[in-house]
Length: 240
Image 1 (tube, rainbow, N blue to C red):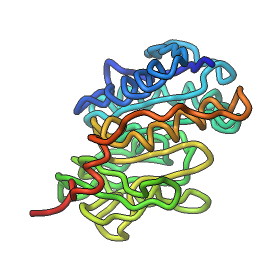
Image 2 (image 1 turned 135 degrees about the vertical axis):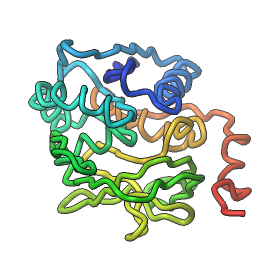
Image 3 (image 1 turned 120 degrees about the vertical axis):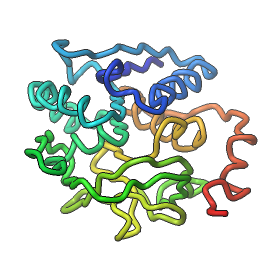
Image 4 (image 1 turned 180 degrees about the vertical axis):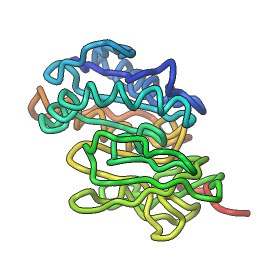
């Protein structure tokens, strides 16, 4: 089996080591003998929605988001087609915000998103920083652990649903106890950097979804994840 990954704008959207998510997927495929082809997509590059199985976009500061926003508008048709072809997306923080309708900064014009999920973000007055634990309905174990650092307040609507429920931390907006968003095979979240290395069960879920675009009866060989999953059984993400 073979997996084609598009890493969107890695030079501009890679705050807090978000590239580690692509490395985690690549390694877990490599250990199973699955060939992975990673393509860096930079400003001006073309996107073939039929070629890529998995798309990753990381986070950045407002300056980087402004630089990428116009480029994403140019790619909107192709990314929407990829979404509707059931390609898999993982969007972190700033990338997550730009996949919604808009991000509204303080005292500035809205930064327009590409609306491939039904969500919008407004700049808040408080920065949410710290460990996060999320409870999901589709994973086993059913938790995600990670680290958030954002002041944007994201609200999801319509057919877009939360990635999970906040057990520790603030999540989307610090009010409705949700974290992240899911629509079709798009997954958005505020969990930075070590999200997939800390959550191998989620990594494998994304790998399997991505492979199922082209292959039937996808089964992934089990890997030894004992150390990683200790974060889910020993309370990482708890407030002390």
